[in-house]
Image (cartoon, rainbow, N blue to C red; front, side, top):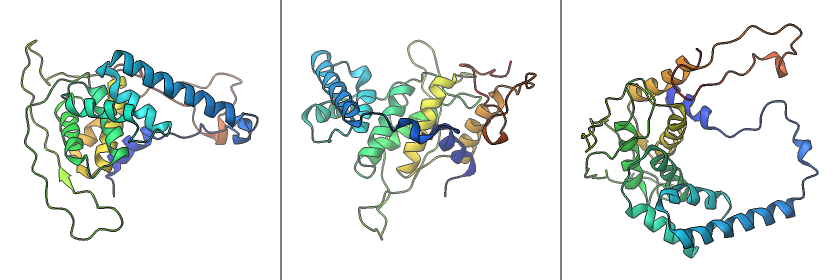
Length: 250
């Protein structure tokens, strides 16, 4: 069972239909045209990756191709995947996206790489629980535990624990002593943490709790209802969001 704090991060990342939206509102959409548009988008992405080969977008493109239903044995998909796995883990956005790709692809086969992604996210967490752009982590040697004795269906993932470590100062003199990050990187990091957790990686409870507190503490403060304002669906409080940086309520 997920710790309550990690469940909070999962809830932030969940893709749900907004409350009050009538599903029948989409009845008039031509699914054939939607499918054709997706197919054209897939072919365009493949062509651009073939032409430019920019590895900075490999993780995002792979995740997009996955959601579009592209098979992992597709030649372009495999080429991008191999290149992504050969590159070092350097930035929060890319590492988090990569974790999502690999967990969806095969959490058993890629568990050691997912463990490295998890270690990156643990090591790069800022003091206040957020994440910034991140930097490469110390080299690591991962010795996986033995596989579970009993499995059902496909092989079960191993349970592997993460222990955050201080980062090595890089050439620019930066380290992970950053006080705070931003909620753009933090959102992606939350998604990456969820993917790694689903792949069997166990994060320290205090790390997850600190991340949760960063989101809760910085949420925009409630505003008094305007005169004549219509209550939201179900009588719930109006939605409150976050700023890009830490002080969302000020």
